[in-house]
Length: 313
Image (cartoon, rainbow, N blue to C red; front, side, top):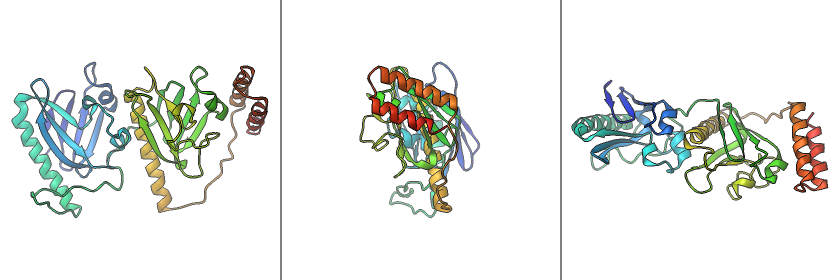
């Protein structure tokens, strides 16, 4: 195809095997869309296309992603507001005829892609309901990524997630456990609850036998996020959607990639011999002492944790 359809907040460029979506950057554009910049969506990542009336004299062209094809929508798990849906293109009502043309063209391209993958036509002549994708077909936002939560700062370099706790927000449980460094090789997933909902958080789900330090059932989804060292909690102004969701998607893609490598070429687990920065250990001991003086840590817990930290030098 190669044509371009410009809408409100976004422009779709139709290629022979994909749709390139470019989002505008501006005050009126939802922050998530501005943060995404642009995304290339392969036809095989989509299951259908819809066109429906919108609000205030508009029509909405929407591509429907296949389950498991996009780490961003997988992480969002249906929690995005309509205005923040990256698969919607809002057009003025007078563009409806043009939108119908491109919707039909895209449907034909999706059907052809489906048939090439060995699918069959349904009773209505179109493709049968698509099965979940076996791998991510849409790239996640790039790394490094970071954002501030209410109780700590989260950062991700593409291989390891770091949670560094804030003195003013983190619970004593998290302070006792210490800052968390979790390689994607030790994770099996991510759980994101939108900061626009009550009790929003980002929780890392560790693989069996790789729980977060001092967390007990950390990452299992059973405990409260403010007491789980494998989770950071959101709040008013903390962990906004346009920062925390791309972060979750990037981690999710890396976790899936690490799992695929384990299946393709399983290797024995390597034990890290790296030692912690002495300045970091001293800082952790100082904060531990403050907790002890405040009565939040017992004598036994203070001694045990201090010994553990010193052993890392």
